[in-house]
Image (cartoon, rainbow over all chains, first blue to last red; front, side, top):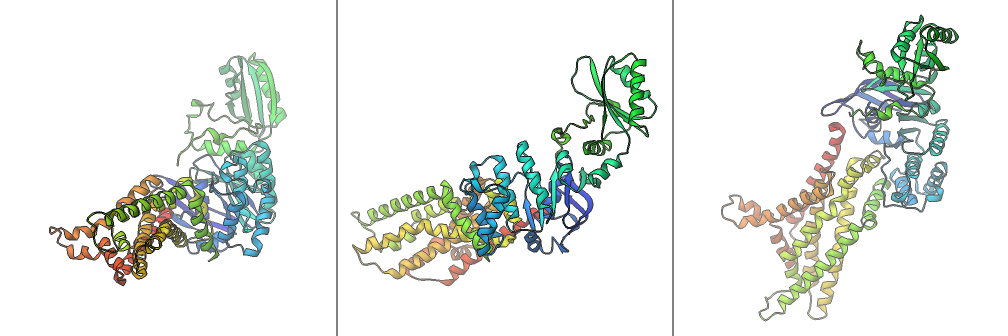
Length: 346
Length: 245
């Protein structure tokens, strides 16, 4: 359905997308995941024909985007980042205009608009002026616009940014439903979102694909190793040393959660059973005269994969201990999104 | 085709969705009326200049000052606003070609320019109650007014596609139409060696002919060529976003 081969996009000073290739099959929901400035939006702009690639090719439904941009555009419903809309129009007016622009036959226009508004639950605001709508409604107007011509492919750039949790759940449900009869590509820097909606994830960082697969595959790719979250009271350095000295421990990270005279560590095992690892940690804590306040076994989330993949390349060898707080992963904490505080400009 | 019609409709109605359109309509109606009153004052003064009032209006500098100021204000929004608001992305990812978008905006601006001038259609009828009016030269005068004005729209659209700032677009447009308008006047300065060439593009001179009822197709071809060139360049600039990034 969508085939991207050796796509690169070079802006004046930087390489926003660097030789990426991937394919998306019919009725797949693919999540494009990466920190801000990783090249997600740029890739989507090339897919939709708004920008063209510096090198490489994009085929949509077998058609080259550069050769027949309009034929490609007819097959795509696109929700750009930040949902630009004409603020002075009424919702129904705007959708009417967009439907005509997308050459929806006059007789079917009313029905197309009504069904798009219904799916996106904006029927009750159809007579409101777009500029006066809340962010959530505007987002849904943009989504309704993308659905108008009933395109086989939907490309959604950050579809849930700026929405409240209920709206996010609504949009996710909608995307999941849409994915049953359409091909969907969505970009996000929010992991739980991608994990909840997508059948496949492509992780992109600094313009390169650094990992792809089903969410469970990616998780497995990080290893079946157990991870344990442990909170210890006592001397930090002693605790870290004791944990690292344990047999079967691959990595220990200190969480930067603020606590009184206690610290939380994430201990990653290497070929160790979780129970065994926990027993070892308990023994080590006792031996080092540390007080064990809390210990929980962790299931690796996609977030771990993400943080692991997108930070492991940056950290130079031997530089690991310099900023343990920066590379802190917080598995199980659904609301955290590492992309949020990483402002990487393209 | 439906897409182009929809786009022209949206562009034209957009003038009426925003206060800019209404302010322009009011301002140009008032300024044109003031200009016309002033013209009639001159003609009915103690030493009246001989000539038909409509004929004098069309080639009067004051009449053109209004057009020169108003034209870039009509076109400044066309692309600059869409670039600024990001709506250009939504527009250009719809199944419509860049050329069709430029043409749609041009047609809408040209139509709005004609709307702005429509109150002046009353003037010959008002005059005809007091003096006989020959309608032929009046039609020719409007042909020139719209020919030149529509050329200004194309120039303004090119200026608007160059920037994301509407004020910059208006200033650029104002400079450009001023240059087009004044270039012909330099044909009277003996220092300019290509004065002969410039005399062909003297817009005020064109208007004197139109106002007499002489429709010289060379003038119309000139307006059409400049418009076509500007619109072609506007399409190129619009497409350059794809490889410039």
